[in-house]
Image (cartoon, rainbow over all chains, first blue to last red; front, top):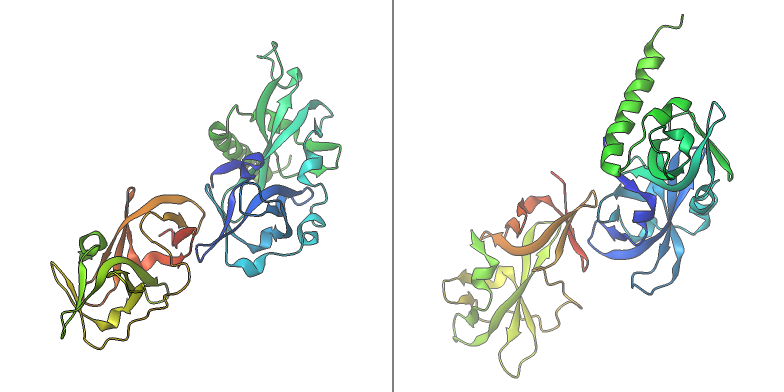
Length: 198
Length: 140
């Protein structure tokens, strides 16, 4: 599986053409909630103090999302802001702070950040959440910040996200550990689906 | 194979008149062909900056670069040329691979054989693009 990245860390990442020119910086990541994907990015100008650009980067125009840059073929793929923002039904800003409920009706926490896959998929694989104590019995002392997989049956609105209850068995404390948990959760999903129904 | 660091600073001299035109400062690369396009010179005193097409070179010697006499000198080099040494290397996946420390090329054809970085050499034919921000290479 590709490397995982927190959406918050994408802010400020340069947008670079395959010709080696930096044309913008990522301002914010726009999340396509129902699709479970990144819809695209809003952009700032290049300088540190440069303001918002009147252009955006739809995910379909991303050549690859990397550790150090978002690669695009050329400047020509940038689009007007509506191309990204209209597509993101629950924009990044609205997902942050949303309550996370399991499909069993338990509230497990609130969304702090989104975790996306590097490369070309644009998949949102999970969330960083401020976890309630109900999530893990071992930590009674304080609310913990943990990563939890998204699952495939995501329902999302501006106020709440619904994840499969068993996703809460695959939490991790950091992004490195989370990659393994997402993989384990996926394999578990596949195993379930291929089992004959009684 | 020759390293750019070995020819940087060498005097560039015309073959017939032994005029010294300047010293080697940088190279321009043609991204499509993977060949060195021009040698750019820090000019001799009182002259304008010049660039010489690779095809006009006669030989790259140990102590001097000789160019054919009567070579058309390009005194209006392209605006804001990219200085390749020190530029960051990005894969087309968007991951950094250090910076260009040196360029290894074939002294006859001008073909770039390797981009030398602190993190290792990258074959010349992986070049995808070269701009002011980065040299972009195929991941390979």
